[in-house]
Image 1 (spheres, rainbow, N blue to C red):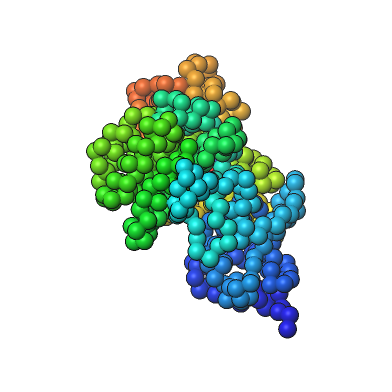
Image 2: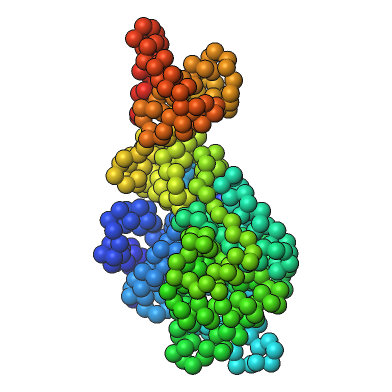
Length: 476
Ligand code: ADP
Ligand code: MG
């Protein structure tokens, strides 16, 4: 008996609802529309590429489970990415992505050579029992390219070092190349970009990306199965080894040990090693000294929190790639509000788009504010100096560079003083920091500015009205 599309999807939803938080359910599952059910293939419509990726990254296990439960082991899920017109999609498109073949689809041409060097029996730790194909790919996400990695002061060194490595893997002094930063600042993206670029420049090189947890669990399995040597041999075959989040090796002596041997072998043979971690090598705890000293052989480069302009550029890139247009003020508002984690910034954007598509509302600054209040924990959003400067400059119609410059033009001086006054009032920044943001002034100048603004407010009604109006704008 043919199953009913809506019924199947409703059943899936009811299981999903029990397994995710209400907020996640609302954000990620309510906007999905079931499209069709043919031959046990359920097609669902999602509003953007990123939305699809988010589902794949965070909910794929759950989705697989519910599909299997509803449709049996033959059941499959396909996504159709359709942007709705209500948020000005410029490039509506629809593609289908079968979940089961995602890897093959992502990188069809990369096969791991399994029997190099005559050792036919090396077991590939990536083989998942039950899968027909023994091939593995580089595990590189096709959209984590250099092109999509927005350049800024925050990442310039790491990015260009990565680029140099991609041109000449194993042949620069950046070996290993270690990228470190807090979470959500682009380490994983950047090392994928390097891998992708290497594959582009040198199609015959074997590039392998592996998260350190996966490396560890493969190793544990290998020990259990007595296939430790296969494991080591396998890793020693690659030309470029990318290990993500090596800080997870902390305290795992055996894993560090085996990695040490693989590292040495690869390094001695001129192979490239690329690592990421949440700290620079000197601060990594629980790591063997001999490993740390090797990490220091090459180059360690950090990714910092992106400055406002970069945050805006990242959002714009994302929107452009997804074919979506948003009002500029909404983009700026997001970038002002979420400052320390690009993943959260993107999450907020996606959530906003999903909400808008769900409620058939246009994306406005008001909707963005409501969303952000929910998104940014504690609602305690601190207004930043950047934001204050932007509001003040917009109000007086001055370019922000002028305010940040040393110019003493009268109209700039006054706007700058007002910005300093608000920064003192609304941020936790020190006088010196405020001064540094406003044309490299010292703390005494900032203090003087605050006094001047206070005095003028008492004596000049029109000036007071300006300041009060600005205050409202800053506080909305
Ligand atoms: P990390 O590995 O440091 O935790 P990720 O590489 O997972 O961070 O990055 C988090 C998200 O932010 C990803 O979706 C990534 O594409 C995005 N991102 C980070 N840096 C940039 C950048 N410079 N340009 C564009 N997107 C970025
Ligand atoms: Mg990462």
